[in-house]
Image (cartoon, rainbow, N blue to C red; front, side, top):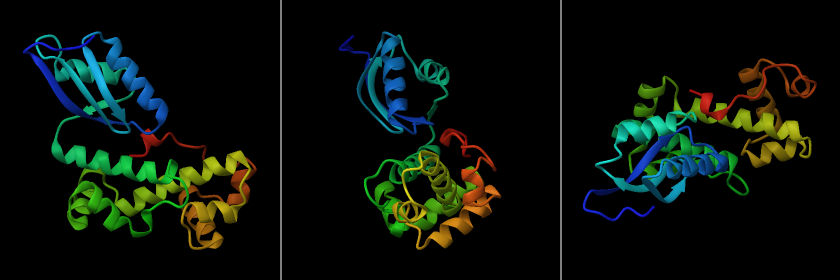
Length: 199
């Protein structure tokens, strides 16, 4: 369906809980399946759409998204927080080579066009967690995933996730999970957590 009348509204939706390529497929499919929404572009955390504003409104879009564990974000502050989370997840989970979070403050500030101190304060106020602690949580989940595959050494995992040493990774892993890497590989400790459930 191709909206083209005078009531056509085109906008970029900021969407909570989009953390993988499969999320992009689900969101695109669900929005298009509604029958009155055209998806022009969809990526992690956002979708550019157009629709007839006499037939579809934000509440209806939110209902469509909610059915699959997503949510429409409306306030500018919430949008910034969600964009920040998406950037962090993308860098840790989907970037090729070592993540660019070595100088995370400059990277995040540049991408979100906001001074890092303000961004950091906003993130803490909205989530109850610092950006640094959120990054640690996401990195530890990635460590769990890579450990479960069993095809990388701990040294390779440490390098891939920008840890300064295997010891530093091991210490942080124990602090967050309550068990050491060896115990975790033996099936002890907490299971992997869905990224949507972190925060």
